[in-house]
Image (cartoon, rainbow, N blue to C red; front, side):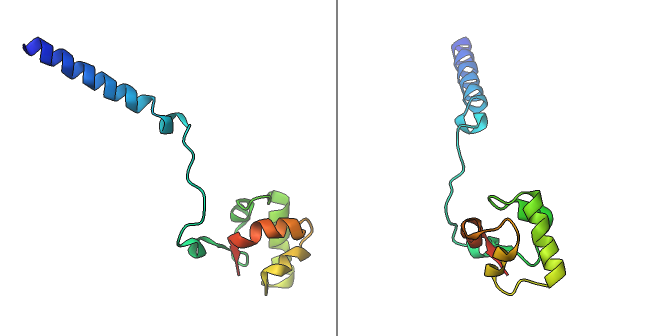
Length: 105
């Protein structure tokens, strides 16, 4: 009887270990839920204080455009409105529309 319980325990243990090791989340099959979070306003990036690395985190903004934003900011002072970003070379209306919801002054 003890041997049966021991085999059952080992079998269940192995099953749990395999389930953990090969779970969809662990293998990368699950994607994080995307969408607006209730406190997204707190997550917006300040275009006047953001670092190069933070600016590069914006969709469609690479190292060159991020540097241009920082250069524009240092040459002209703080942005007075988000629309001023379109004055930065490489940020047209389409790109501005993609990133404006992620930004704040």
